[in-house]
Image (cartoon, rainbow, N blue to C red; front, side, top):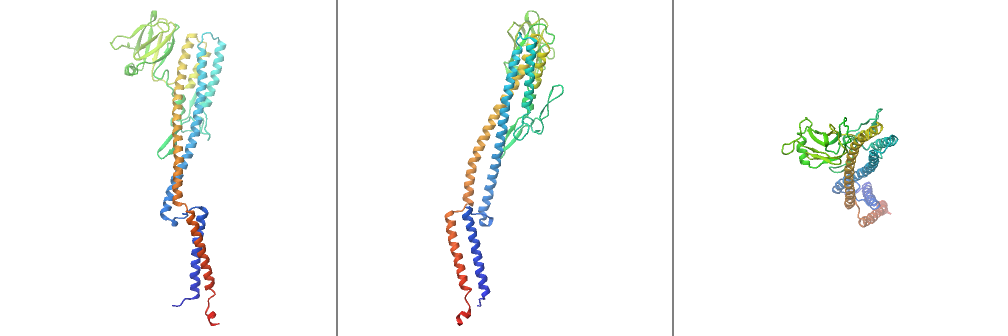
Length: 408
């Protein structure tokens, strides 16, 4: 068999190139600490690396979403606390206005303060997050949701949807509550029903606190009552009640409800109780209505108008009492939302902690799969380096071999 010189050169060169390639790969492994750089290094391991990398990337994105959600929810919670403080001030001013010793200048001063509170409330309702998106516009965040018209009426331009953030596989958390539910669609009165005195009343009757005392009775009679009642006073405080259809309200025995009211007492029937003060004149009425709503901006405007209209003390007391009820309902809604926000923040904290623990686990698994064994890599590097040097030395000797060296 004939071995040509070119063949020997080619074989030696191929061997050295392969050794250099292996040595370079091992040097890279030692330098980076990574064993799998391309899929051919370990096809099975490379598949695991891809899967683990995808999981880690998803968790990182969820963590980023959680950070953004935390910022937005904390901003909303802080804003709602400010709203509550503003409404506390409005409520205090409303109670002061009921004081019969106030003169016209005092009432106008309170009206001026309430005007400032209304403007401040609009500003708070239009608060934006760190990205400039409106907090209380629902999912329509590109413009201020609450606009004040030329007539002073506040209009809501957002929608009723809640904003969400994806913080896990199949897990979303609300990151923004629509202003329609917080400020606009507020149940009137005590949340179940609203009371009012007749515009033609001539007595000193003032309707105070009212509430549902028996929910089952209230619910069972509400449908048949037509959605409301009218209480009519006769002489000596005697009263009767009719439903929205004008029919007398009957008790469980089928007898018309009624009685005699005394100053500071209350009237109860069909699962509700209405406290009152003052003395009604014959023919004075009190109405009960259900299902109404009143936005907080209208509430403040009504308070301002009442103070500026020069009404009697009795009329002002009734008007202010009803608006204070509306403030209470708004604050109740805001408080419930604050509780919900606290729950969402707890969820985000738990999720963030879970992702931090999982990332440690996944990073450890990724290192186990793709990471290099430093001792093994350094040992291989030494052996491959020695083998390459040996090949180079052998080639240096072989290339000097010639038939002429044996003929000398």
